[in-house]
Image (cartoon, one colour):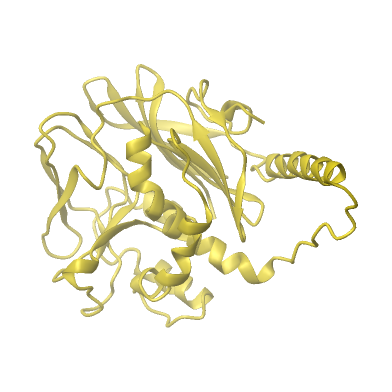
Length: 316
């Protein structure tokens, strides 16, 4: 299992991307992805800025880089002081110096209060449980359109049943950020395949390692870490190799274990991965497509039919 296109079936060209050794942190498994880089894409934290929140449901972003197009990550959200917290329903392409108002954003904070201090401001990616619902809401007005789904997720986690996503993102942040320290971001890594409790959760590909490094924490801790944290109580403890009698036997057992684990991950992929592609927008040779299917959905950015960015997730 070294080629990404042998694991993930998608209506885009994934050839050239390769898989590394799986890493586990509790219920979360991360398989590193390496492959062709596309330099010149503005990364999300150092280049993309939240200008302002213009009332409920409207967020203004700015590409402050002197050159290069910014790919706004799918389902990026901002926690900020003095304004309601919002998340976007779609990815986007912003030229150098461009400012755009997104009027179909989802407010993820159902009432005033819960703001963080300025020193604690950061961005996140919507948790897996909300991503398919948010994608289906792109282009639709209504700032409160995700509140009921957030309330349902909160109830499932034993939290107050209300449309406040910060109940998870801030109050459980200390627990969720452990995934970042337990999983290793590798040199040259520009993507990852995520599994939660042995089942496919998502595929993330960035234009280059710098871009992916800036997405690492939001993806590991929030997009997929939330579901993994919830799955932890269901996992069984793995028995240690107490009966191993030699180093050679231990190596053999570990190698067999790796092969068994890789095979288990293959079986964790959805049986039906057929997806349909619709172009959303374009900038020069870059094309943003929305992919929808019964088991997997998300968005990709291509350039002359080659993948530049991808965020695909399991439909739950």
